Image (cartoon, rainbow, N blue to C red):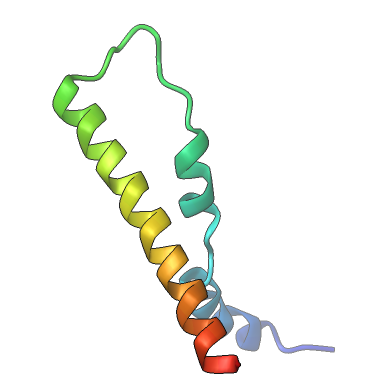
Length: 67
């Protein structure tokens, strides 16, 4: 049986590897009653592009490192 104190200590480590928010960022639904400004929409577009470029670079780096 595991010690409850042991599992509580592992929770902060688990939070570092929680990528749910990153993946759901691309599929968020906008509130139809509150239309975002053009600046906010552009900011989200740049953020999505940055995440995609980072993930592509990470994949390329891992492939070069492993091969």
